[in-house]
Length: 50
Image 1 (cartoon, rainbow, N blue to C red):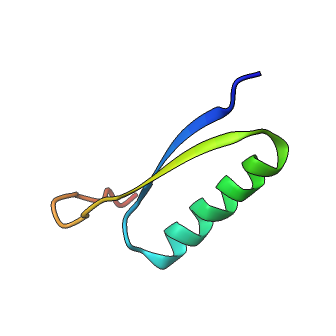
Image 2: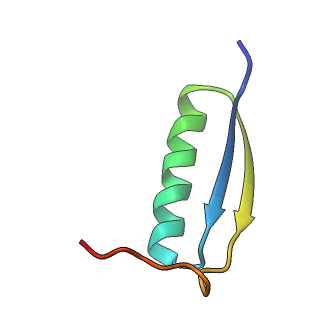
Image 3: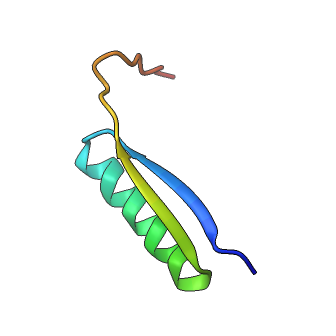
C-alpha cells in the first residue's frame, strides 16, 4: 500500500496548528504518511463568519 500524501497548510494561528498537527499524528499512527507542511499568509484571506 502506498503512503498517504498530505499537504498541511499552516496559517500561524496556534490553535489551528495544534489541531492540524494532532490530526497528522493520529493519521501517522494508523497508516504510513508523507507530510509536506506549508506556511501561508492570511493577510490577504477573508474569513467567512457564520
